[in-house]
Image (cartoon, rainbow, N blue to C red; front, top):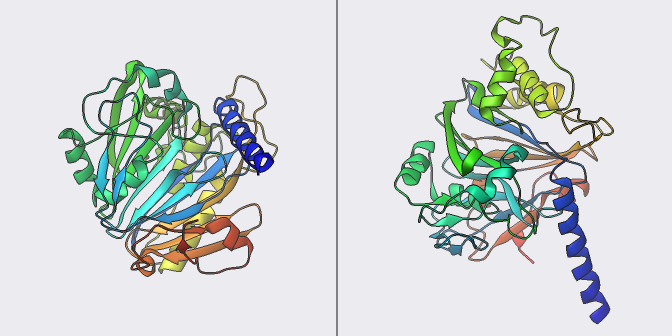
Length: 362
């Protein structure tokens, strides 16, 4: 038993070191929200230098939760789960950090890497509001709120703050991450940490450039870079940048998104058209180096994608490595029980499952 325990400790330590070492190199992940006849439809990727996973997790409505790991803040957040939520946790390198969450009110939240915020994390000051660790903030949003307006109102009233200054729980390292929320109306709010530890919230809709979210630079930098390509006047996209860097992915996704017309399509064809535009714009193959990373030759690839519709509640998890997928509808995940339920989406997709099956978490 001692040998097994020591091996487990060594494995956790190695994973923590790997995340800390790679955080400066992996500038990955993309998200695109399309406004369709069936309401907003989201697709996003999980990209990294090593394989990533996806475990769907459900905390029962009424459960009392506490955000642990907000050590630099006087008041860690506690809340009671209000809305039925399915949260997608990353179990391989980020120790359960929630990357995406959808609730049964047609509200969603997502986290993507933002390396440019990392130098500012220790500059963020505690404002006295209940603090939510970055590992929990996406679940916190979905379990508590049903609209972007509600989130912004709660934030303005001091009901929560993001614990930007703390390490992401379980990783043993500081990370730069940015967060977005969206709802059935098409509203979007993007939370980013800027120089001096200043939190900036960009507000928009699926009809503007907030419909696309990648990584560094911060949103003002993304806008400056995209302006060089004058997407609205670029009919054929002949001069669009082709690298895997996040500003190049942002430009390509904005361009291809502007050319899509989802009018009159059923939900299946809507999802197919969105996936086609997404894959052609931002899906990252293995072995291609990112030119932004100081000439280091850093490479990463797309491992997983999520795609879901806020009106129907349909959710698809795609394992890119094996070209398999598994689906669920959030309404079918209600009433499972009074404990936490989980489902390893990648494991089930690889086993040939078509519909995700939940069981009590181990």
